[in-house]
Length: 452
RNA sequence: GUGGUCGUAGCUCAGUUGGUUAGAGCGUCUGAUUGUGGUUCAGAAGGUCGCGGGUUCGAGACCCGUCCUCCACCCCA
Image (cartoon, rainbow, N blue to C red; front, side):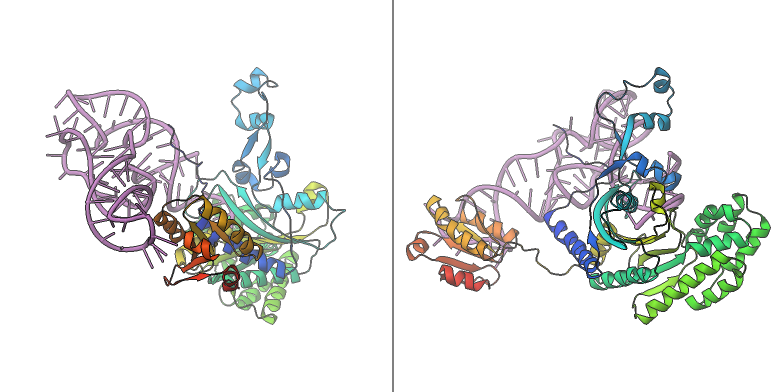
């Protein structure tokens, strides 16, 4: 006999766990709808051509690829087979892959359905994504993302709304968080000022590590990418930036005085901070220049949300992308979006034990009986309850009473209706409150009344 | 992809310098109690000691390989 198992980095969810997860999904969904977002879904698999090249070199490696059907080696030459070049070979034997995130499939969706959509288009999407990563703390190979995006609007009001959504969702979930924000244009400006415009990716990746490895190592890494000592010297005041958000912006204005993009980024952030203040966003927002985010399609604001009371990677992240639809042939459509990592939120909630006492008990009443006759007697009662929208079930075979009562107990069913000959003769059931132990003979009307 | 770590019953874990038939608690099932659960008592079932090889008279324990778990790096939700 083989031992049952599931693939690395995947999980089963028990009824209890699903109740907790649904609490998260429902909270998120409620807030998304409150802001006028509508749900879509896209397939688990996309054409590899849609996915490849959108997430950088690292991302491509982390794509799960799906083997072609049929005898896919038939069309291969011996050279290709014996060449042992997995990348070349992959292109020949795989044309589909599992989705890596929800943003790129969404961009594809927008382009494909552009004539049916009215812009600005506000959509949300809650589906699993897959990454061929090494699993570790807070990292899975299959996990749910909850995305909200607006496309077809440049307005910074969209950035504001996303921040308000973050604020509201974490307030409802009772998780204390900090929103970190940055702007890709500021990073571009910095690269421009120090004369290394093409090295922007290398610089941002290095800056991103500031928290982890410190100033000295960041400088070393930047230097190792072939950036001049002079440029690195110019970079220093930026890396050491401190103070409140507005103080930081003020300093940046001086440093970036000669960079048009840079100043644009600063003014965008000023606007966003102003809007958040005006709308009294409660969550603290922190301008964090070390926030770079690897995904290479962001062009404006970049967000990341971290939980304060728990050691965990970012639980939400996103940003503005000005031309993601461009690669699919639809130019000039700007989008901004943010993604909630449901599984990390789930882990945070588990660690802090923040679940409400809510209805884990889903069945309100269980019918317990002693024989075939009693079972038949119960069926109309069940129908009557269910018609009224009351969750009711019956133990489907005449098992020992102890067994049936334990079933109710384990499932945390609050009421049990006991049916034997006495009850049938009177046309009633014995209703027992499992918490208090009280019980009484009741008619069908009285029973239904009880649950209203 | 790199480095480390773990693996014994459904779950959480003991298992001495290598030595008879591998244990406990929880859970499950049965009975005490043929119409009353959550408490108690008695009993039972449940193991290829992750898998493969090696050392040895003898391996759960030691060695090698492999898979898996968890953690860190990379990257990210």
